[in-house]
Image (cartoon, rainbow, N blue to C red; front, top):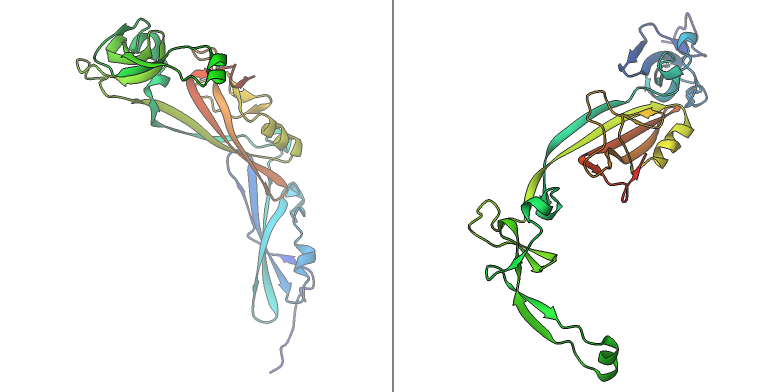
Length: 285
């Protein structure tokens, strides 16, 4: 039996009722629309990445991706996803950042503890038999050594002990050997300690290539506020300020960017330090 055609010939895409718009709460809007078309319809010419949403109210939403199902009776169902930024949020230029935190304990070398000097290890050291012998290289005229082939005279002496059995190779400190006094069981034999670590992971979207490039340039900078320039990346509940080392406490440690429709999706990470990121090592802004 021959096919009998009636109604719309579907030579142009016909938008179906029931299409949706979803707001993620931070300003990102997504929409899913369904079209019916004839199987001969040129989908590649119609569903071009970046095309505007068919409803004028949501023309700020741009085509991201599509899929097609081939139906019976020479018809096809075309499903298109659109994405964009609500124009009521930051004038539609960027979403509000969506940030979460991860907090826990990590192992660090005991010498990195902020109280290692002077509280834990002290600053005054005395020689003791508790620690191992350490080598001393007697300073000889190195020029003479090169000419005559002489070798350095190597002797050994007792190592030096500070607070809590902290052992060093010289009276001025030098290389830390370890905690060698068993009368301090909380420290004896210990080389590491547990320290708190806090990181923030976030995502934001922007229509501006300049925004994406600006955030890349801010990588490895530390701030004492919630913001890096015009970008407010930390939530109001995050601790901010200057640490005891005079460094700002939050460091922008990672920035990743990918295209999402006509937007730039920016994924970032921030590392928090209670003592701060020292300005001689990290750029403080």
